[in-house]
Amino acid sequence: MTSQEKKQLQITACKVRMGIIESTHAAKCGHPGGSMSAAELFTYLYHKELNVDPANPKWEDRDRFVLSKGHCAPGLYAALAHRGFFPVEDLLQLRKVGSYLQGHPNMNTVPGVDMSTGSLGQGISTACGMALAAKVQKKNNRVYTLLGDGEIQEGQVWEACMFASHYKLDNLCIIIDNNGLQIDGDVAKVMSPYPIDAKLEAFGFDVQCIDGHDFDQIEAAMEHAKTVKGKPSAIIMTTVKGKDVSFMENEAGWHGVAPNDAQYEQAMAELNKKLAELEGM
Image (cartoon, rainbow, N blue to C red; front, top):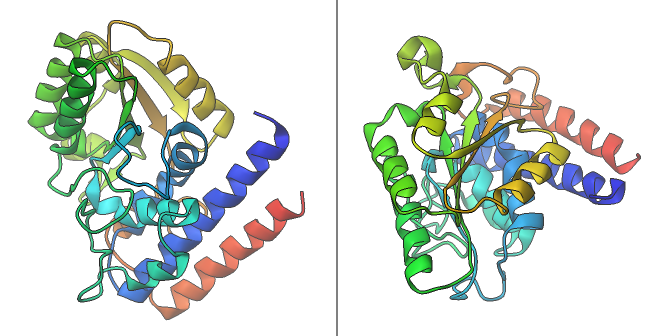
């Protein structure tokens, strides 16, 4: 990508993080930590990778994205809003009574959401079904799904991986947000999923390991995944939970806690400073 394209993606990722902070603060609840760690991934998918149309969210031949770690809806919503699926101002309605933007994605109410998720481990299974359906129907659209590293402690995830390999779903790309923390703490101590790459390779995946905050590495991995034939692809992203807000970074406590007023002011000040730096580059 050009330096200008990368700059614009970085600016958008910063705005996505601002949307996460604003929406969870307004809701007084939600999951900012794991949403922040995936901001670059959400941004790249909706502004570079996915073949989608905000004016026609149900377009039959669109690419599909399933947020398997559905509690990170604030990040997905912010990315969808900045792509034009619905107004950015609506992010402040997160989790409000009667709002279409609830705590977990709802495909029946949110434009751009392809699957209702939230029960961990199930999203990847539906993504596999979408990928197989596309193959049966001889369609060229691709399917992407994002999982948390704590989520892959679920047995259903590995059943889905076995399914994906068995049916040679080379139109499927699973992405794992390896920020190292889950609601109960360090994933390695709670129930270690490591080595994630070797496990996925044993299940028949083409596996890549990248820095999930580096747009050049994200692009290279996505482009490579599209060349893989006869097997599904996996991208393991090393990321920082709570990325770009100093007091949130690498803190498991920010898994599912909203910032209070003082924390909101500090977080937004830090993000606005970063945004100004990016726009001045």
